[in-house]
Image (cartoon, rainbow, N blue to C red):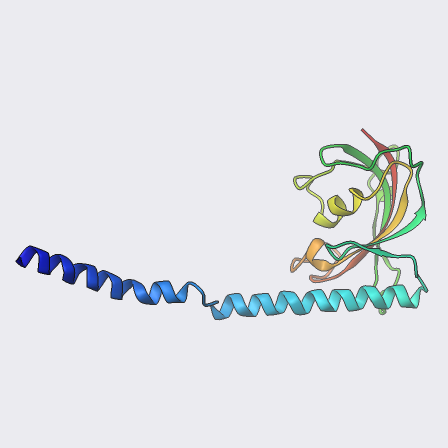
Length: 182
């Protein structure tokens, strides 16, 4: 009887001790909540900056992807060329520019500066490319011969990290031409 009573008390104590843990599972810590709210506000700031750029430049043919990336066709490659898929090696010419009103159009990077014979950049498309996520996402919507303006929100660029001349939380524009796909 005493063993049974001890067992019941132990189970009861265990249940009471676990209650705060169980009920706190559904609560968001203040840090997580602040980070989520900051990320949501930053997405809106990026969207506003991209929309302002499109408006300033009278661009009306931009296609918005679910990710928040905007693609503006400049030149279309042959439709017989398949869309790029992850794992393929992609060779591109690109020019990276700022889109903010204060720095509108200022170049921060270009493939012609990378000292290759072709003045281009080759990379294996995918999450382990070593490039910003926005490139891997955008190029999946492109084919050999395409040239597009790619407007990338900061969450798919360098996020909260600065990189060279690029400040943290900066949406970017890349004028990208797909030279080859293998």
